[in-house]
Amino acid sequence: MLIKRPSDVLPSEITPEHIYARRRELMKAAAAGSILAATGGLVSGNAGAQGGGLQKLAGVKKSPYSTVEQANTYKQITTYNNFYEFGTDKDDPARYADKLKVSPWTVVIEGEVKKPRTVGIEELLKLPLEERVYRLRCVEAWSMVIPWVGFEFRELAKLVEPTGNAKFVEFVTAYQPETMPGVRLPVLEWPYVEALRLDEAMHPLTIMAVGLYGEVLPNQSGAPVRLVVPWKYGFKSGKSIVRIRFVEKQPKTAWEKAAPHEYGFYSNVNPDVDHPRWSQRREKRLPSFFATRDTVIFNGYGGEVASLYAGMDLKKNF
Amino acid sequence: MPRWNPSPRAIRAIKAVVFVVALAPLARLALGVVAFPEWLGTNPAEYITRSLGDWTLRFLLLTLTVTPLRRVTGWHWLLRLRRMLGLFTFFYGVVHLTSYVAFDHVFAIDEILKDIVKRPFITVGFTALALMTPLAMTSTNAMVRRLGAHRWTALHRLVYPIAVLGVVHFWMMVKRDITEPAIYAVVLAVLLGYRVAVARVGAREPRAA
Image (tube, rainbow over all chains, first blue to last red; front, side):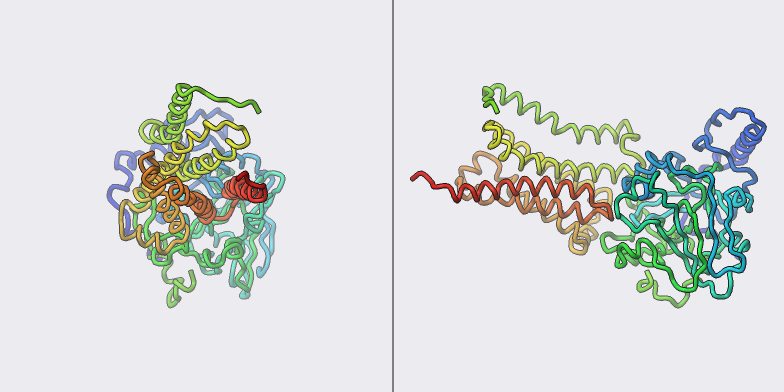
């Protein structure tokens, strides 16, 4: 497959060379940390390395799909979240998600598949893990760059072998009323449901993330396993997934049910399709004050995914 | 409730204190920008714009609380604070608009105009602030005299639709969880409801000739 570099990177956004050159060094330090951890040694925070002191993930490969743009800090990524199950303020998830019960965790994979299965998180962590530094564009017109760790969704599909009837994939997220203060309000229909067309889900850019900055996911980022679809608005990437259904008919997603005129099934990043209440022409790369960045169609991943939508009216299918 | 009648000197002191306290929210944001970025979080611009909007609404509701509170407590001197509170509402509203214009649009006038026309919640917020402008301009004693008490009072009744527009603006902006705007709406409903109730009672009572 021909992999194109995103063309929208400004020179100023490229990681300074002296830091970039230290990447291996930092990775070695991280690897040393995980060996220490595995041998029972105590790891006291690597100076300069990002993270939240969570369990390190081992055997993570680099990926050519990663952007070289400067990633946001661990703190920025984990204190500004939309995870409505824990409240609708951006700092609610960081405050309340520690209660989320993430162990034991299983994902039920069912529907139009030859081998329906219930898979434990331990098994998922054994799938080929890669670091994917992706741009994340929120429908609210801000964006970040996030170093996820995950495996391609198609690796998961191999485990269950979808049948010819499978046309869509539905992702059902965790519903734990006892740990989630936000689900007391009917803000959205719970549990939160998202969905992709099968070819979108099987695209190599679509990953199931299990980590951030080389560590397991913090709860507010959707632990222990979440979807990441970098060319769509952030809300398409459901957090804390418990059930994956291969289905024939296009599912109704949570935001479609809540506000169909504002949130479509596809929700591809598109500067030419405004949200009814605000423009999508530009975006604010956090923590910048100013929305000065031009939004790029498919969030800059058009080289990889535009062909999925050949001949489709993207304004109608927003 | 015991009547409390502070001396003119005490009122001046109270006004000075209110003035300084009313600037505290802005001072906190300014300090956040220059020295303590962690106060403003990952999206500082959004935090600032929302916070300024919140304070605009809070000062508006405080301004509308003066009359009922005065009637209930008999503290007529409270009226002496109303103009300042009203002007702070306008002040925070202008800074709120400025922050939106600067951060979200980087002063691109054509886009701002498009936003005002195309996006109802911006239209509503902008209208509220536009309607506040003549009230701020006619807030001086000289303007009260020039207009005459009757016309001045009639003009300043605009504060009621302005308050409704302000709460509607917040309500429309919120994506999904309407808890916060609903709280403002309830407070406003109580403040306006009180006035309606008083007017009805007043109309029924026989008036002295």
